[in-house]
Amino acid sequence: MSEKDNLLQADGKLENQSTENSAKTEEKKVTEPTENQEIPESQDEVLNEIEAVNAEDAEDEDTKGRHEIEVKDYHAMELEELVAELERLVKDEKAQAIKTHVEEIRAEFKTKFNVLLEDKKEEFLNEGGNEIDFHYSSPIHKQFKETYFVYRDKLKTHYQSIEKNHKDNLAERLRIIEEIKGLINVEENINTTYKYFKELQEQWRNAGAIPRDKYNNAWNTYHHHVEIFYDFLHLNRDLRDLDFKHNLDQKLKIIERAEELAQDDNLNRAFRELQVLHKLWKEDLGPVAKENRDEIWNRFKAATKIIHDKRQDYFKDLDKIYELNLETKHAIISKIEAISKQPVKSHSAWQNKIKEIETLRKEFFSAGKVPVKVNEATWSKFKDVVRDFNRNKNTFYKDLKKEQHNNLDKKLALIKIAEENKNSEDFETTTPLMKKIQNEWKNIGHVPRRDSDKIWKQFKGACNHYFNKFHATKDAENKESLEIYNKKKELLDTMKTLEMSGDNKQDLQLIKDHIAQWKALGAVPQNKRYIEGKYSKALDALFDGLKMDKEEAEMIKFENKLENLSNANDSRFLDNERSFIRKKIDEVKGEINQLENNLLFFKHVKDDNPLVKEVYKNIEKHKSTLALWKTKLSKIKELY
Image: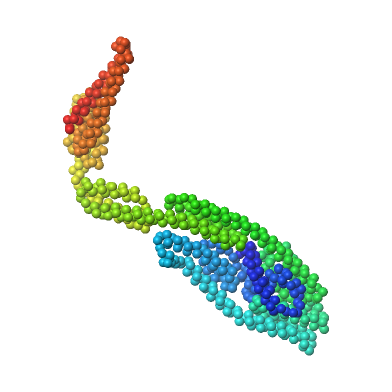
């Protein structure tokens, strides 16, 4: 337990117990004056505090553990941490020593669990549930209740066991008081009487704990009759003065220690030891000579007041700390409120906001305590802004779930189509359909996570079944075409390594022979048609190495190209080639017209002018190109 928490706990406890004990003492007044009654309890706050705690300790002899058990920051703990701490305390500590700890843990657990319960209920209602049907069972809640009941049983057993002892001890102390009262009427040797008095004092010290509401009355009565006995001892001043001197020496030591504690900065430790000193003063030591009583009591009380005042100043500073904590928590609440108002339209964005809120939530719990008067209001405001955020989040995911369920229906419809057509052998009709539903699947969007893998496997299985069958059928049909492809691949490798002899006629015939072999092999499968492009490049390289008319070589390559286009069994290829040639013809015609128009600028220039010669040269070149394109166009027309 921190020093701050110990002092706060003691302060609250003392205030309540002081009022209770004062009332009970008032009810059972002792008319005889005692040493401590020189300063009435109602007029001395610090004595009230010490008397109250010592009265509580008198009811439970085992108080050491209560002071030393750490009180942690339960407000900053999550549900699981609270239960773990409760289990540890119940297992390792005595039930009567952890009452404050347990009740604080219980209050925090109840608050946090109620928030969780509200969130779960809201999620249930958002998903379409009926409020009357809502039920949430949590293992952590069950674990907490079981541990708390174990604590209550232990505490009950403890109090039952000490109740009888308290009554017996009280009876014993009352008997001792009666014995002391009777000593002044005993007619025997004063030394014998004094010895018996000391025995009674020892019996009193060992009599054990009594109920706290009887504590002050019993002690005041006891001290009253002890003082009467000492007054009786005037018959034997030596014994009385010896005892007075012993008590004075011991009380002076107590005062000196109290004055040392008044300078101690550890207020929690100083106040605890001060309680012990007051207990020794009251319970273990008898009176001193009358002429010393006021002096030493006032000196002891002065040191006590210094400690008390320092504690009060500490609590004032503590209030300032609590105010700063309050400002921090208000700032956190404002941040959460701002985040809650920000528009969020995607799952990833919501996940980022959820992480931000969780971080702020932990900061709130770690910010420390706030003034008691605003604690409930601050906690309530915090719950409200977090609840608003959760409502917005739940609304988004509710709409998202609705959209995902619609997507699920769409994908189930596509699965139905895929399943109905997976065994179809009408490949020309079914293949475009299957490709179409595959594209639609990609564009539909997310479905509920629990269904995602299942429906994807089902859809993929139906599509794969169809396309595996389709490819198997096509592979069987294209077996011969695949063999052609392999032969053309071998021929292409040969053409790439051909060595020309240098004899133009002989080399041209060699190329034509390879062209003839290529044509004779036939068509390759559609998915292997890329080899025709490689063949055209290899053929271009061979022609480029020949010393022959370029137009002749160009027409040989073009006729070979046309044959490949015709073998493709797709008129679109020929149509595209015809459109391309017509476009080239128009472009060349345009170039010629432009050049002829340019000659008009040189009509007064002689024909042997270099510029004019260059223009005429270009016109002839373009006319030659135009003739070649027209020849190619006529070759295509022959195929239609």
